Length: 329
Ligand SMILES: NC(=O)c1ccc[n+]([C@@H]2O[C@H](COP(=O)([O-])OP(=O)(O)OC[C@H]3O[C@@H](n4cnc5c(N)ncnc54)[C@H](OP(=O)(O)O)[C@@H]3O)[C@@H](O)[C@H]2O)c1
Image (cartoon, rainbow, N blue to C red; front, side):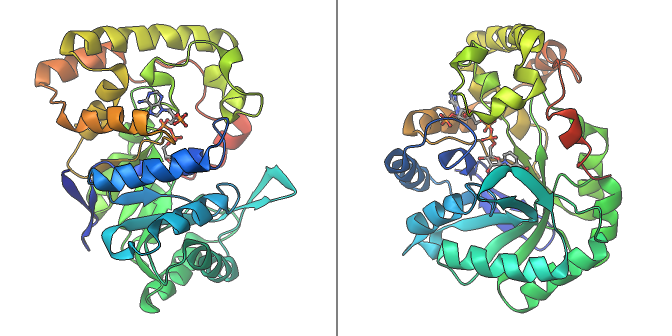
């Protein structure tokens, strides 16, 4: 497995990480035993970069990952996030909290659940509009001084926020959705990362599973599946987006790979500073996704893929309109 470096302070991680969110939340039925087996297989195959967050579960995903990394701490890089506060009694309700008190409270809980005394990469999950980013990052920087955190990250922050944050402390990674149906980071975020020596972590690189071509009908999603609330999965958008997947599928077929592998290879090909974190709770999908690491895309392939899935090709917003407002500038 290729290693890539995030940020100028050199956080080395596997070029493909593993998104653990779906093991505890959001995407249908859970199976802890298969999730644990998937984590183990990932590590065996050279995946060392594991992505979780306080709010996944909430808390359960950090606990699951904590069980897995017990006794293996020096072999893995653990990334977690704070700043989206969910009420376990009413998990649909969310608030953003980037206050210094919450930074300190959150890290203690995460370390405990993960069963470790440090995290490799600590992200602010969403920028809190009520707290200046300098205050949040200042409190996060204090955790680096205390040795509880090795590197800092931001999630869904825009160029202006990143520019302010790096004045307080280097930001090793910015994590944002990036895939063949979400090319928003090309509008300034990727350039800002390069300007500030910040690595880029692409989340939902499989378009929350849609780009694999395996999701054929809205009705097949479990009643509580988060994707039912995503505009891209609803009504006519779903059908139109299937056309986009069909175009990706046809190029994948010619290359002798799966559409998911093509989608992952495309993200990886967008820069040496980009790391993908596809999410799965199944060994079968993990194996397929790792196969993407061997896929080479020529300049001609990239041109054709770009024509098949140009910027803005997906129908519907990537989050409901009310949630899109939470993306920071
Ligand atoms: N910073 C943020 O705000 C944010 C937001 C979302 C996600 N994330 C992080 O990014 C990670 C990845 O994103 P994601 O999980 O949302 O989306 P994703 O990686 O684009 O897709 C995950 C979905 O695709 C399915 N899948 C994976 N590999 C497949 C394959 N080879 N064939 C068919 N289906 C496949 C998974 O199914 P199964 O679940 O059944 O395995 C899951 O439902 C998350 O786990 C999380 O750690 C961060």
